[in-house]
Image 1: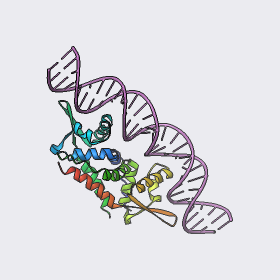
Image 2: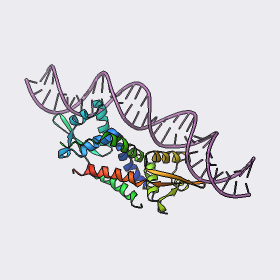
Image 3: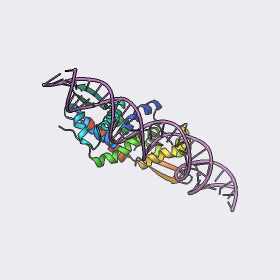
Image 4: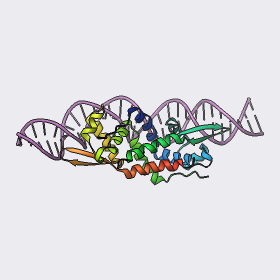
Length: 102
Length: 102
DNA sequence: TGTCAACCTCGACGCATGTCAAAATCAGCT
DNA sequence: AGCTGATTTTGACATGCGTCGAGGTTGACA
């Protein structure tokens, strides 16, 4: 009887992060940001990679920001995004733990 | 310039799985299923663990099923759910890869 | 001060989602 | 056949989400 129900607080914290990754556009944005050379990438390099309007990309980036998956910093005219690996590691760890019983 | 945009097909396949995990209830359901003793667990053991109606739990289980995260099998009057670790490993691997540049 | 480019916010539009009660299905039992 | 319990489906409702165009803010530069 090891039905380990995840703690409600943990679930409430991690679920929004999974949710933020649950959109193909945001998943691709996240992969571009996380694998960017120098650890960061400008919005002006992200936007033209998609057939979507600027506001829509901005909205998705805000979602990733609010989920705690990325950080943004303005320098001069450009805004640079970088990944926050701590949270990503938590997500990966949770999936691995779920996996352990098999 | 390693802005590795995830392939659109991959993103379209994996995003729904992340999306399915993007709800606290489903995340807890998933943890109970994945860590269940014997690798499987009955719906009748899942439902009372939440302050939600039976139909609502059934709906969330269907979402997990359609995302490819779990399998269901009916035996006698009861339906048993078990995790599909292959997909979970893909998700974990993607997060780890994103992480590698840091 | 004015102008331009980059980026974000606002308001609106359809569509998807979480939830429930009610009804349907399924399997065992009498 | 009929009853009972377990699970899913259906129909409905309110809320949330992805998208866009229009407008606003910020910073550089002349």
